[in-house]
Length: 466
Ligand SMILES: [Mn+2]
Image (cartoon, rainbow, N blue to C red):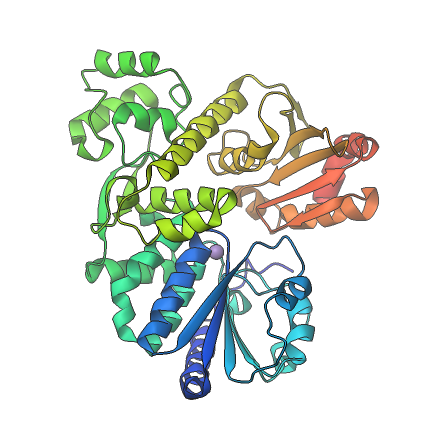
């Protein structure tokens, strides 16, 4: 079953949103406390702050937790629920909570109300008329919207909050961070609710929408660093190269290597396009109340995503700061520097095993395992390899003696394969070859024994075509 070809039903989705909003509004006078549970990424943290601002405006006491999906919902919530059941507490889940086959059995046994605002595809065959009465489930993917292209978690949280307190518009910059973090494209390419909310917030001047050369990952920096550290697009021939080489190319074309990316003139941009084959003019969001790296929505979101894995409390603090800390900035620079270098390695020197539908890349010893997943993701969004093939990137993991693979495909691949994406392929592999793993349409991962890996390589097209 593919939701991709379904035309979104806007009316039905908005009805369900309004219904959820009026439930929350009606019951809120009975709530002593509202607990938000959100996802550990930029979008999730943006959602959390939007909801906390809402609860503050509604004079409701609040608390929060971050869920990183490393344990089951049952184990996670057991650690959160108080011993004494309290009807007067409500729970709001944002950017998580669509795993209904796990959640509904838990929610059924609880006296509290649960509001779930999520944009991930629903993992359950339970139909809405079977939801327990204390669950209010708002998810645009149920009505044919695409959770990646049409509506970010923060867009949904904002639409919910704005209907309860319209002054939440002032915190709309949080929504822009969520959108930038989840959509991985320039802002002129937004669609549906993401686009509508983005335009509304630009009109309200809570952020500034600008057009220019897109070098995401390094919009805050000089053109020299921009070409070197841009991860979207990755600039072949410049990304991950030495300063000396980049400076020379720029100087030879009469461009000051130290000029800021955002200050480049049209003439200079043209020159850069000539020497790089870059074709990335687009729109980006600037947050005027912030400074340096944090001024730029994509870079701000990327920093949050990096910190969510390294140091979650630093992520929660950075989003509330005007200026980036030295610690966070160093973490960020180290990240984009190594990611750009990895993308360079990937786009030229590595041996690949290719079939009609798949590309296997063994990066063991070339790229550290902690970077495999992000390298695979940005390899895919940048289409560094054939976009009509699935990428299997990984190698032997020493401690487990298993083959660990990050698996990615592009939108183009999905269109060619009737919406059969990474998660479907992983399910098929697990069924026949064993192993552990999972994912969504565009991204996922699996661990296999060496013998299974060998069989997978021989038979991969069959798993993909089914
Ligand atoms: Mn999200």
